[in-house]
Length: 471
Image (cartoon, rainbow, N blue to C red; front, side):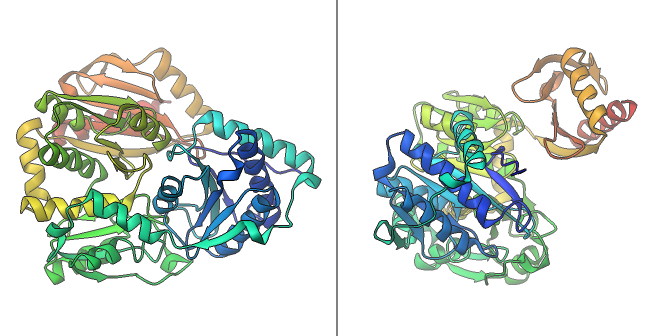
């Protein structure tokens, strides 16, 4: 069988009916079963969740059949369920892990599988490598795949009550009563979660795009400014305090201020840390961010004097594992991932949204005034990401040159250091920086830029474009 099944940054994703077939899903399920049995955790069982995509419920039933055929109890969610809710079920029920069927914010023709171990954070390379070894074996020995499930080991579950009870313990629900919110789940799996919880605690919520639509209304289930235009309009028209959104599997968030303008993921991460520091007043603590995430996190930590910031490679598996090790207050990544102390170390767009709602209610300010209060402590920060298209050969050569012969200055700013934790990060005088990372799937280089003002940011953008164009 000429099939390549690789677990990338966050699991295996592929086009349905091409690579993502029932036969290949069964092979991945058998590989996961082999791994779980080898770890000695089979009797504890696995929860299986799935997003709102076409056929996801049938793929979930197939995975359950394979797991139970291998003697592993399988708990299948009774409807399409967010990734963070599925992951929380591991902790709530003491399970060996979770299998989540999702392609996140990818186009509707894609689907995907990820395995989350008992640690409740995305699987680290040693786990995904071991599963890939089992996949390779199953591809060579398809007769080893067991598909005759054991009905006595399979059950349907509703994970929402346990998850909501957990949220009641994390959030000040009394403060949320009376808040006016517009919620947009983008026709996907988050529907009934952010809005359902807010209604349960007395908030006034309008839901848009709230029905399940496997085609996501002809767009992508990605909470970017273009896809949230209707949300922005409804926030302005209704006079809501804020607008909230989740992506395809509700592990990422989108947030719109009362004036209809979107707040970036970097800003939400900073606001979350600021709010928790004010709310909890810890004597000391930790925060975790990826190498591509704003240094305003560091500046805010310095202003309080008692918070250690940990920098990780891109990918929430690194954020989550560091949170689990340090007990961090907040962990975040600029692509829209966030979790907090007391929760599972997996990104959760539902919780991120609700924390922003709680902050607005408790602080009595909307998001921009809150950001202004943070800036009084840290100074202003401006961030931007640009994608520069290059050929594969040029991409490799450029990355080699950035690693081995980084420029001495960019746009008149001296390079005072480099960071090779993930890609090449050029640290510039004045606390500016540029991160260059090659795309693993496309012929392009991603550049992340941060500076204290728009003029410097624009100059660095032009300098990077010139460097890449020169090849």
